Length: 185
Image (cartoon, rainbow, N blue to C red):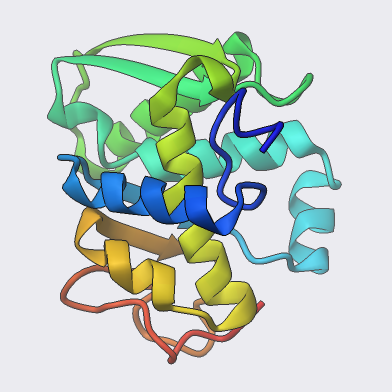
């Protein structure tokens, strides 16, 4: 309960608090998009040399690449993570996402994008994101879909970037739902 007084955190909240937060999330109007990076040592060693900043930047690029052009004004809130999540790093990730989209679709992005790095205790939306991400993590790591299924109409996309070997589609959407066919991590 001590941590809950500061901010909600799915993995740390007691069951009673978690239940109330999930019921509240169910009533809110939001959609959720997620990138999953499986912990594959060879990939992280060869591609990023295990540098957290590079890994996080790669995830942000992939998450935002096909979303940024959809809106004229965007406020991106990132939960601070020590020296890994910094404004310059996230700006670089967003710039890379814009360039990747332009190279793929030959379309300019004229969105006005502002970046905010904050503690999750300062932004309830970061806490809500933590809860939804926790449901996805439980599905992957424990095969527990109970919480995910409760919020699945809010989850528009789970892109499992590194799961291309076994499944023809690693984009999980309402039409191709995340379910027991995923390989646990």
